[in-house]
Amino acid sequence: MRDRRHPLLPRGARSGHRRPPQQRCGIPHEASAAAAGRRSREGTGRALPPRGDRALGVPPACRPGTAAVAAVVVGVAVALALRGYAHTAVASGPTGDEPPLLGPRVRAWYRGVLAPFEDQLVVWRVHPDLLTFAQLGVSILAGAAFWAGWIFVAGWLTILAGTLDILDGGVARRNGAAGRRGALVDSVVDRYSEFATFLGLGAFFRDDWVLLAVAVAAFASLMVSYTRARAEGLGVALSAGRAQRPERYVVLGFGAWLSGLVAHLACPVLGHPTHAVLGAAVVLLAALSAWTALARARLAARELQGGAG
Image 1: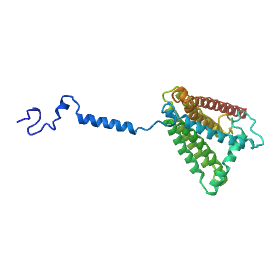
Image 2 (image 1 turned 60 degrees about the vertical axis):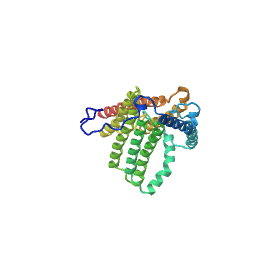
Image 3 (image 1 turned 135 degrees about the vertical axis):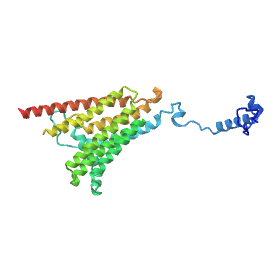
Image 4 (image 1 turned 45 degrees about the horizontal axis):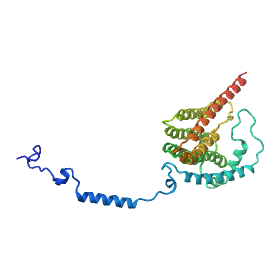
């Protein structure tokens, strides 16, 4: 015979455990209510008091205290850098058309900062290709940091990638490994590195109008390098340009970490983090890169026309 309580069950099947009358009628069991109340009181007793920025009523996404400490550290580092820059002397800089934004004094100062590291890498016989591919790895991490919204970290990773880009060339020249093969590998890896960084940057601004500026900056940066490569293939030496690779690293890297600081310092006032500084840096990078690509094309065309005449 079928179970009378559940006529649809097969013969021999049981309807399962029966609930108490209180639960069937929708009345909570006294023991269950008491246990729930006890758990609620225990949970309330274990709650930790708010600390740090949350104790000040700042939204959880804001970290003005941490940003203030980081700003002090960065300020000290900048002051020391300016002191070293003031004691750096160079003969003269380029005076031709479209000189780079970072003059010879800045470049000489930074190479002086990197000189001890370069010396140690030469002593350790580190192959330049290792530094080149390390730059690619750091650029991928920078793109991932942009994607995840870790803007301050992404800025420093971008600066580190640019530093490795400088070191690999210096080590190659001192090790006697500089040549056409190394130049080819370096150029190819540089393009992949730029793509990885801009990919993460575009993912971060995917719902913002700044995404258009990211696309322009990525395309213009590639055109800066392509114009030089094409001109050199036609026999025209082309090294001029306002926004070369070091300038692009500086604009994006420093713009990112400055945006990370400003976002959290201004967060208590605005109520949420904002990365308007990073957006402005991307727009500036797009404009400078586009200008540099067009200027290089104009200079190369003038040289080719003069040679043909």
